[in-house]
Length: 368
Figure 1 (cartoon, one colour):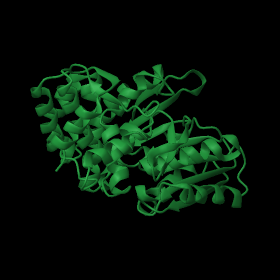
Figure 2: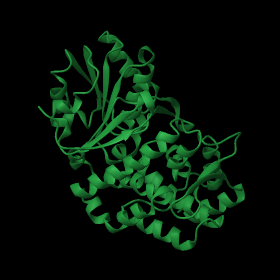
Figure 3: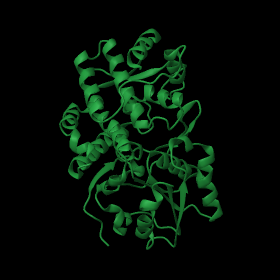
Figure 4: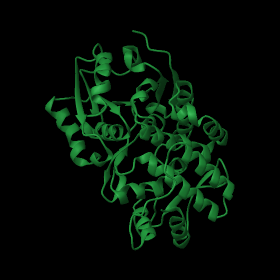
């Protein structure tokens, strides 16, 4: 079979470069995977929600390319993104005597993609893997750029590796099974690209929110492509987040504190990021970097996507103190000093610290 019509965005990283394929029906076609390295075995890693929907389709597309196509369905949810679940992947690889040419396929959302990538980076010190994201959030963010890992009770994604996939396959048709809440979560990661890099894109998102929420194919395809283009541009300049790439974490410092403070899985990642963007924009305003109109506009867009814009209480006695303690475990912190991604004028991001007293004011103003 020939591949379905698709658009391609390239991640340019010298010998680690790879394509992102974007289109409808890509999972139906063996040709989609024709450029992959051959091997004896393919392992499809999914979860108990996604596997019944799409694993047979992927295994069929891979059957002519690999002698064995085996499958593992992990428990579903952010609360399972830990060592014990990761070991299920290693157990399966070892039980089937998988070798260095085994190719792992991550069929699922960000949790599946992050853990499968980390397993691929670690098994026999590195085997090939492919991202097949099935959520909007994974298609526009977590499947692209090579960040892999698991959570620790004290911090999100604190254990992992930078490890690039062979390719990313964004089949827009797979999004039709998403619950509304998951669609909204994905929209948060689309919205973030506007304030940090492309205000024209933010204006397009603002004007096209109804078709995006309804998963209208043309609108979603454009949003996925533009998001991937912007992320590709950033990752191509800073693969290992030594500088520029950190701007992709706009809203994430506050958001990760929400996720860890409530318990992983209570809020979806995109919900926490949406609220975190409001908090980071408010901090930017109080530092004199943007005006109140910008914060109000961004808040309206986030609300229109169906996302929360008020932070939860993480502690009754000292809520702001609890946020600060959790944020000090953020990967961008240096020597215990929290560094925030802030908006230094619409369409430009900067990473810098802020006084604890001011951060406390923002948290108090932005929480329920």
